[in-house]
Amino acid sequence: MNDVIRENYLQKISKFRDQDVIKILTGVRRCGKSTIMKQYIQRLLDEGVSEEDVVYVNMESLSNHRFEDGMVLYRHISEIGKKRRLYVFLDEVQMIRGWERVVNSLKADMDCDIYLTGSNAYLLSTEISTLLTGRSVSFMILPLSFKEFLELDPPEGLHGIPERFSRYVHLGGMPFIRPGDDEDVVFQRLGEIKSDILLKDVCNRKERIDSVKIRKMVDYMFSEAGNPLSAENLANRLKISTSTAGEYLSLIMDSLLFYKAERFDVKGKEVLSTMPKIYCVDTGLRNTQPIIGDRDYGRVLENIVFLELLRRGFSVYAGKNGKHEIDFVTVRNGRYGYVQVSQTIVDEEVRKRELMPFRTVTGNGDRLLIVADPVEKTEADGVTVMNIMDFLLE
Image (cartoon, rainbow, N blue to C red; front, side):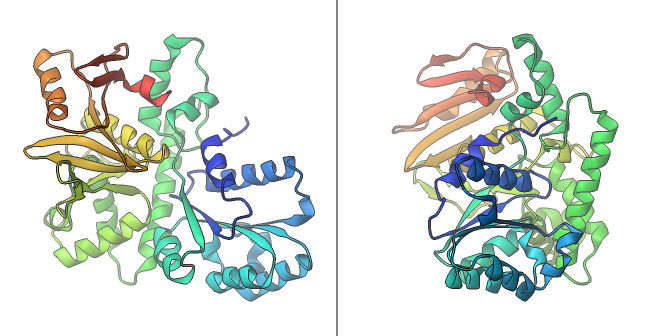
């Protein structure tokens, strides 16, 4: 079966084609970065770029083992690119020793448009920011959206969508999942992906790390997705020092298994220093953990909405307005939006409670209440109420 064409990402990347910046695709392992890179290459070929002008190096292939030495790779590409423009794609670039110098030299010495992928956030954000200042642009790649998930497994009519949504919530959106896959097989693969991430993107980055504590911390973070989290919380939970917990937390966040929603003061329009909320990159990976604590379905839905807002290009914060909290404050191009997520608002008291935070917000900005109830899209008191599946498929 063919892969989903990740059009959202392809369009974003295409806007920077032939511009003098290095394009970087970042994201957790196995979320589809390599596939997107290959789809983009095919788009270039379809638009008339010659195959001879495209250099694709997948560092996970043993056939490219020699290119782990950055100088060997540099000489190889230099030989290909004499006196013509190249499109250079380096997949899993962190496996190339001295890759930063290779990329800088290619940019300085040749006429080339460069694209990179990598799994490690530290490698492709902190280091890039100092080595390639002003000369790179990053694209955050996430697992499949629900809309993309349905493209792989189209329902026969609208009645099939809720069943597909339940499967999406349970299994997540990792691109390897196919219709009819046995759940046990899917979760075995998800467990292997999680272990791979913990080994290669967390434990291998620091000597004398306690891998058992790391795994326990990750599983606890999965169980707490949608809640505020701090190093102090984790230290108390795992019976380790706050400094060690903070160090481990930083390593885990860098693996891109989780994303933060910083606290945002709605009235003052400023980011607060209080504990951020954390959300996991994929609900299927979350469901590989042992059952720890509260597995509230409402917070799972909130997690899914958070990821979707990121896909749509918003900066997303956890809103606070006095004593009231708003699940998400979104910002894009200077425009604010306000989003609440609720499992159900059938009960009138719950409905009032979920709508209350919107009444404390002044000024312009869309106000959206997303629910799991099978409701038609409506508007009341300036707030749009809609079903979560309808929201995800807009």
